[in-house]
Image 1 (cartoon, helix red, strand yellow):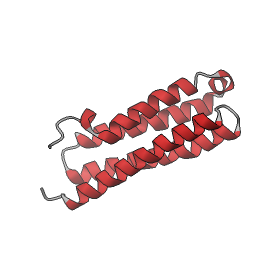
Image 2: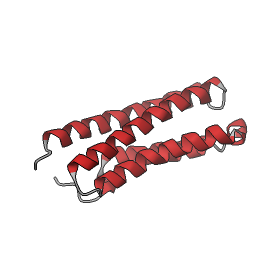
Image 3: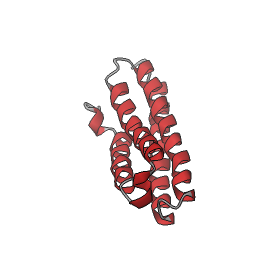
Image 4: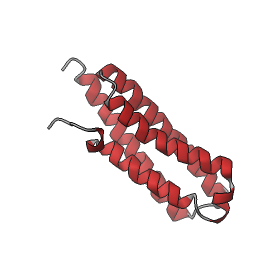
Length: 123
């Protein structure tokens, strides 16, 4: 099955879910007042989605791979920032675990897609 739109990409769907979750979490109490951290984690989540979409429409598999790598690195950034949010008690352990698990899933999907694109570069 050929993917026709970036909205069909599973990693983009999961990144959208993560972004929504992070926006909800960043509205809570002290987290909402930590403007720097709040802004950074929101931007990192949005970057995952945006890079997948931009890469899909980039016009070449080579360029798509580059954008998928950007998305992967943004997911790593989210993971790192999640540790800070947990250490500052801005989120619960369950919220941390749920967000981290979703981010790990996204990275696995992106990594698998990058491998697929590498194998099928000439198709």
